[in-house]
Length: 315
Image (cartoon, rainbow, N blue to C red; front, top):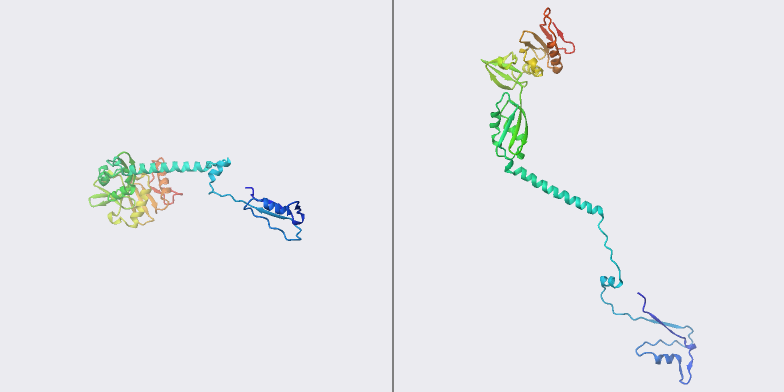
């Protein structure tokens, strides 16, 4: 804002000339002619040599400042800078993601607790020793429970009392069916108990009983029930568990004088010298190959020795 100061100039006294006829100096005349109320400049002392400059300022009354009115009065334009595109894009993405998460959470909550997905049917596969109805009866406490709330551990816990079940696979089939695939323990031998025979797996778990050993097509472990759970039984059962099903079906019985001297008997009277339970997978392959070899009627094989599987012997 330009200054309102207005300098006034008063000449020095030595340059003042008397007004002819009035007896007054020019300075006096100026004082007489000045407006009333105006401050008169001081008269310099006699003998002064410099001119005197005085200044006065009139300050107008100032009203409270209003920036908007000042901008309108001055014709100024206010520029509004737009929000950066990157920030707008992030906001849109976050909003979309949040909306999707809310919808998914709502759908999951509805699925987990919806009575529409309540269990009504249990489909059972993979049973040989068990009857499917036994599995379905064991899983009866799950009926009416929504499928998403049924876990594999829930099914396993209810089937723990069925010793024939080694593991299970569970699959939910909406809207109301639970598919249970049972993996049973595999019987590898028969152990005679009085007039009956017990089917046992490689761990010695008694899976079932039968009166006819021929119906099971399994070798009979010599030693009876007293061998179950002992080192000799474990060694023998481990050997039987490694044999292919077609070889196992040809066995008559198995025995062990020690854990390093397991022997097997075939139904036709041939003997298999197995040795210990080491390298049982390799021994099983070698034995299967030997049994498939063409027989020589003139020199029938009576003994298959696979105790050293890389150097088998027949005699």
